[in-house]
Length: 298
Length: 306
Image (cartoon, rainbow over all chains, first blue to last red; front, top):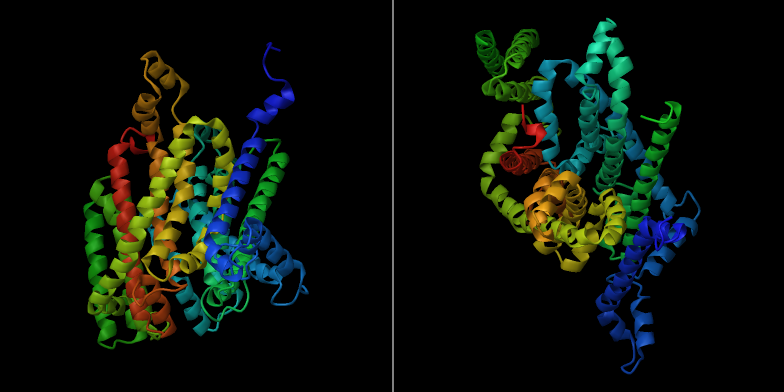
């Protein structure tokens, strides 16, 4: 070991990611509390006597019932109450609302996987599809789909399709794009040398697909699957916004915004982020499982 | 090539004939037969066109495909007598578009020019500035980057009701949502791009005695451009979505999101689809413009070399 170099644990602390992330998180928390103090100051001043101390003032600013910006511990408290304070099948329970959103996002993701992979296979294998379809796949994403989500829900509702399916359709429409793009890239990833090798084995197109293209595409699929998961959750939440949606995080967001329940809004927002994170975690687990199955690499 | 052009012309002619036949009240089998003929001709034309590598063919193939989709939509809606309340035909949408042009223009001004454009510039600018600011501190970079990645995966659009509460019903709250939505992708991509320049090039700059600023300007920012353009393109779609969704939570009585939600509730779908057309045109135009600039500025990148 070089003299003067920091010892191993200290070096790991300095070069690792934990300490920087913790620092940034602490800074965010500090800024948050300060911002809550400033934003809620007028409301806090209104309820306090004139010569109240700074401690009483801060206490009042950080514990309003309808704060402009709730303090983090208030959000955590509301989240805990909404998650565990009601029976599981009560509409006020956040698990109940989140499970509706999760079901929509998951079904949408399944649609998206099927459609995305199918399109990618067609685009890679048929030249006419590549030329005619790919520009429209890209153009489909420049349409602000989320903007028309409520309308799709209304129209499908008139057709007698309500509940899970319309919302899953929107989640799927958003999520299929990254999957298609990633799969097209991945299916084309094998280089000419490898394709030539398959030719010398006189492999059929199906064999080239099963033994070369498909395995090569998986390492492109997973990063894009993460983006797709995040998009599917966003799509499900926005699809729940139109009036009439009874369950789901989006319906709760809308209700909270109508009645000015900021604590409920923030708690729902945190829950939505947790749902996204759980989805990302699940994809990570599947990826790790595949990696193990295939001997340590994708 | 000549065959493909002839086929295209034939397809267009037969398609027009089929539509005119529908208007004249022809019955099912005749229209179906002519329609299938037109579809077959169009597909054959596309197959022929895709074999050619000229610029015209590259544009004509997807254009033909789009026209085929629009025509099939029109034929199905008119031919099967689908209620205009459920799915208006393209011709009905075009009619709504032309008759309501002033309203659409006002909505476009309110949503795109007053909310999306300032929010997009502020959000992308702030993301870029923060990425440059934390560039000199590996500590901050290691702390901010994972969190930025996490934040890009979160449903940030859900913050819209809170922004409406803070900044009121006007365009300011929509711009704020757009700022938040565009900030993190820009931060993450710029940071990734700044790490792109190779050690050899950096060593070369060092041997020229170039300082931090010169290296940043002449080497690292240039190398980061492809990543920055990725974020710009991604954000151009995100920004429009953010502004429109924010309008669902409260708005003055003008704006694309407002119009879509109220007209959908009144089942006046022609107007809704006209508004969607405006959004699609705005989205495609901004995406295309950024892509053109990208091609001009990063012409050296492998993805643009043939």
